Length: 216
Ligand code: TPP
Image 1: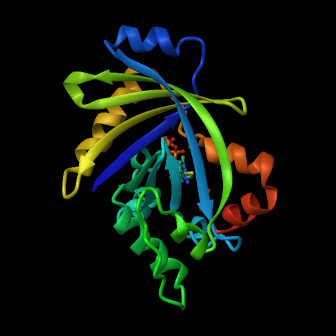
Image 2: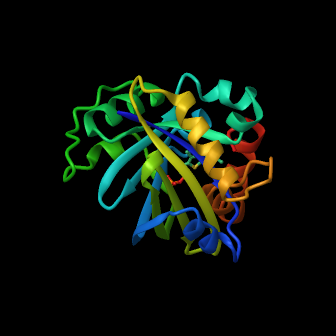
């Protein structure tokens, strides 16, 4: 299980040029189709847990113990998010079940093929979109930059570093800060993610709930 430390930024006409100038290498372009799931009462997202199916595989992004300190800590860290990325299906099932606290013990299988656990836990798809992503690596630093264009018309960049469990998250924050500086990112405001824009447009009630709980 790794921790994804990430800073989002707004792209502009100069972003590609800047990436080339700092030696970023494009390592590919792909379409990512995401379906996000939650209960009708928003059990997961109100806990900042994001269950999605991407390329047929289940993934769960959830906060780390330090996620909160980033929000309150120094300015550079406050611009970053930290999420654990869980891709093991039994572990995802366990964590989701823990939160939803289902009374009846689910007997359902939870293989990639048998998806009865999804409906047993009353999970429904609340967001579905496709993102065209161009990825760049800054090899010497282990930093990846993604430029995302979502199909609902939102363009956002992400500087990210994957930290293995128990790894040095402070070093990751520093790498991100340096990369942001090289890219000439001056803003000190958090930039909205794709989900933020998607929910605001498509599910204003869900969006308002998450805003009021300071999740988004
Ligand atoms: N990003 C910011 C800037 N603030 C947040 N509160 C979140 C993310 C929380 N969050 C909302 S949707 C989501 C998360 C973790 C899942 C999608 O994550 P995101 O990093 O937007 O997309 P990805 O790069 O995984 O496609």
